[in-house]
Image (cartoon, rainbow, N blue to C red; front, top):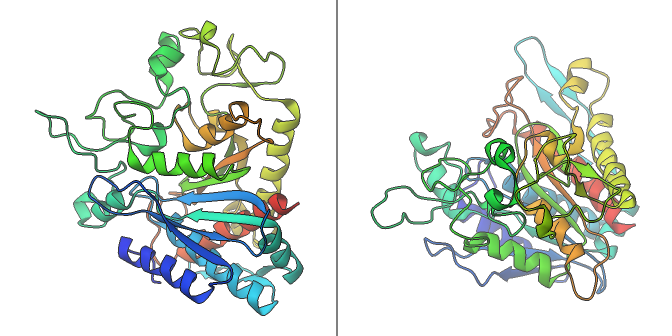
Length: 385
């Protein structure tokens, strides 16, 4: 599958993985079709029943071309390694940089680790959340930076689309959730003509976000990563406000705080997260960070370009209605109570150093791809226990 892949190529690759590995891979077509009538499918990889449920997603934002491709190539590599009893090998990559070649050496995960992942984890992968948006983004150079889905405009308007990563049912109504300063600071909008962060007409109004939410709920996902680009960050909850571990009453479900949350660090409100849960997010996030950096080799330039920040989502900017915060929120809402949920937004790559930002060129894609593979393999090892 050549990068950047089309919507059709992604669906074909999902079908090929299921056909080539029938004992390990099940392909599911989600019930919700997109506004343009496309189906969305995902695969489940599992060698044994009872594995810890994990979900990886990509392609929520149409212009972010690299995540779906990197997720699918990781799956192909993982399945091949498992069936051959071999190591998971991330090949060497040489960046032909203008100031001199930068060599990223090969790295590997042992065959025993591959076996542990496949046999202890139920791995669900929805590589492309937003096929309508991707197809539009790839349809012409003038459309390349399209971010949202392709929800049709309201009567009398020409403004299309919803930001799927603002549409989940977690602090979705930011004007109710925040005070006036928080309303201004949050990266969200109720204006359907906002080209970036329109939240939709209601929480979970969009078929694509409903599909992800259904997988999270129905499969009782315990470990989740939503892959985006760009900024070289590994972001854990919360993105909607500052983290704090002391006061359980300060939480997204408590209406007593409506209109009083400030959405920034050091304010009167902080979103509660249990200290053990916060510590585990930091620990696993550091393992993902280390997997990328340790594979950078001895070149100082490669090391500098392999540094990912591990921090709360708020460190990027305040957000509401995101997939990773929603996934994390489910542990406080499930009946019967869920085990803890570990959730991240992985922001891959950079717009510096010739990496291309939202759309890395094919020549640099292997560098971005390896960072996805390395970090997610470390994540999956943590999930496997």
